[in-house]
Image (cartoon, rainbow, N blue to C red):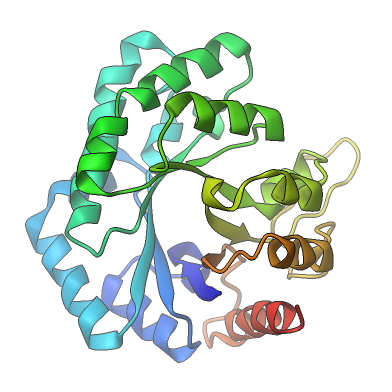
Length: 266
């Protein structure tokens, strides 16, 4: 498996610092976030893309994915009227991906873009289906990150009918939903998984999920996750989404060590 880390876990938005910190903790990749409209403009920014390519080459650190969090600011793919503009954001991400070694383009369904009703899932499926031809031509994976249950994920991926549409396994989010994470992983086909996101979560009755938790100290059953991934012979990206912790990077370094040891044992 290849170990990556999301930029939020590195505690900076400065791309030079991101790569320096990632190199320090000895990960192989960085997941980049585009969380609002201002950041999303960088998807088509040639200087930004050139800078990233230079840093990738200089540090021998890949980009694991382009996380289009801007889509969560509104019901971007849930309402027909919002779909065309949202599809254009995804297309921009796909064009950028082509120039960066083809990291996954991660389409998240959280916040206002969270899928809650069957009609919304139908709208989303049609919207993604319409992007499949472009994804195949560019050879870029559209990675769906959501709180959908196993049968819903399988239905969405199957209906899109392309190996260029896959699911993100997010062990923290799925645990917060009280899913059997190991069972869901085993239920997916290997080719249906784009990458695995790792964070812990603590659940308490009457309170929202708390993700500000060190790995192994919350409710995620990491040994089951590792066993399930081993059972399906997964060997792709495992990307940390842990709290950034201290400025010296000791907590991040500890988290990276936890994940490396976890999967070495399996």
